[in-house]
Image (tube, rainbow, N blue to C red; front, side):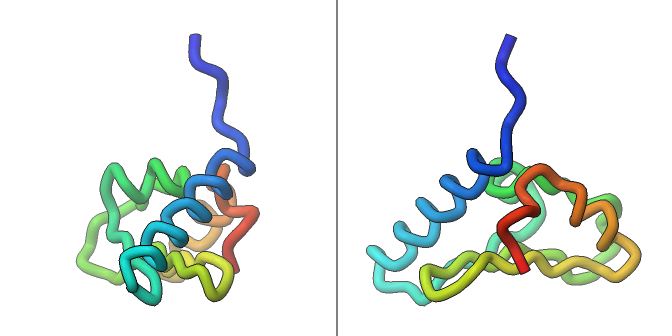
Length: 85
């Protein structure tokens, strides 16, 4: 059985993604809902209503998770949420 993911696991994944973006000459990356968002931060959007939901990862700062106001509580409880603003 696989062990559960911890906040540090997601922090390492987001840091690695930020470095990869920087190595590619990018200022960062914007990750939209889907498997990559779940893999990077452990958050799965509650609803897909066409409202902005994105994870912004940059080597210049902390990751930012943009979610609709009514999903904020769910997003804050995601395992990887300890690192974003």
